[in-house]
Length: 250
Image (cartoon, rainbow, N blue to C red; front, side, top):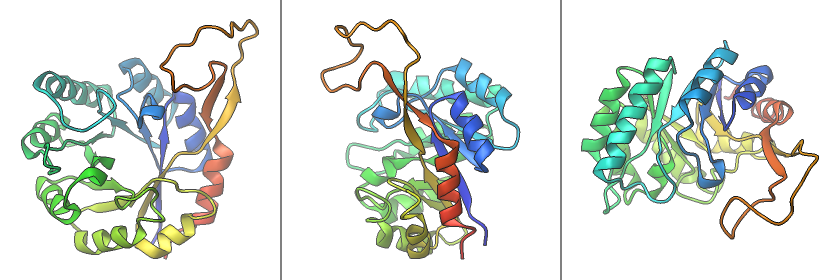
């Protein structure tokens, strides 16, 4: 059984790097520091134009924080789903919960309907669900194609026992895709421990800003911040290392 590798990226260059390294799919986001937010339409269009063999799935998440949204945010997400669908994306990545930690089925139905047949992934909002097995059953019933999860733990390796149980529970209804802390050192163990068919990871390395003029005084974010003149970019070499370490699966 061959493995499918999905790379979490935040730029068109990241998609190009992932494709060059042999990845099958990318999850296109902005603001990875916040866990991934909806990218701009321009970024979606530029990414779709830049790659040919890799599938582009777009996260639909209007803000960081929890996954309980008001009516304005829901309307925005519904519109964003339709917009990236019309732009030519191959899938969308969504996640909505109730205050009690259940899948918000009514909102999920609206977003799935707006997707118009695109592949739908339920993202790591799943890891905040009160009952992962009940949530999995609901998502299967809604027709979601896959669930991204760290097994409700810090990393997919630590959450591997739960992921394995979810894989078994899901059967052929949907794909349970481990993600969170996947590296060349642990990807083989995660695959072996979970029986997963798909793997999700980021392959980021630090890259200095090309700016030659630098003002060290102002900064563009909150008190918890990264250096202004250091960026993180997707590394084709690191993507390749994970794929080589993971192999084709069992």
